[in-house]
Image (tube, rainbow, N blue to C red):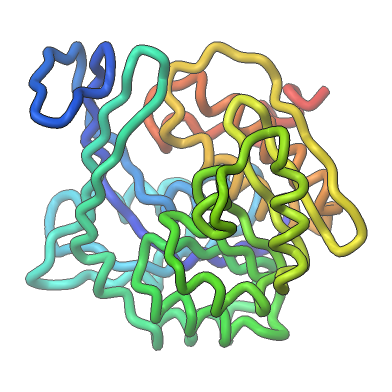
Length: 300
């Protein structure tokens, strides 16, 4: 497999389960509480590593127990953490997550030390790593993402998962090899709601603005892929969802691992869809991320 370089966030997920997501001003009883490793960048790094890629992670954590635990866990997955910086005076990132009985979630992110990721650290890793794929999200400072995109031109493929959405995305798309968004983010970018009925048209519209390829993930409906030469829908296997928290990151990490190994983008999309379907059947973000063997078995 190839080398995936991830510049991104590392969080600790504080997860409670409840029958439903409470309304504004409402207090309800939950059923369970768990602490999981998380953060979109770290999740995608772990997903890529479990899918067989060699992975380097660039990020920042606080000088606290959460930060040390997260770095140790990444190292335990075989991920290079030499470029993870420990920041004094800032807490490690935290995500407060509520998961309902249908497996849907609401998330509040406390950025913490993730806001201290430095553009120079990212640029240095990008120019020195010899990576096949650079994986980015918008859960870290925009300036770091923009600097990473600029530094990666001519060095492997650049994949941006534009989550959470930032309207400045329009400044970056022309330099991207692949843009990955869910239907909400795609709708925010395009200015109209995206559904399975118009997702291919939406993805093709974004491709015309610059990125070489666009993936719109559609949850239980799989994903659509659009390139300069065509578009297709990749349905997801029918499964019973327990927790959707890590599904998008499972897709992105596995997609990057497949792409880094030289697989066609269509194969990478199919593998990502299968990985997402496997992930929703397990509680917790990183605990849900499947192994390469599980993905291949599910792909048949």
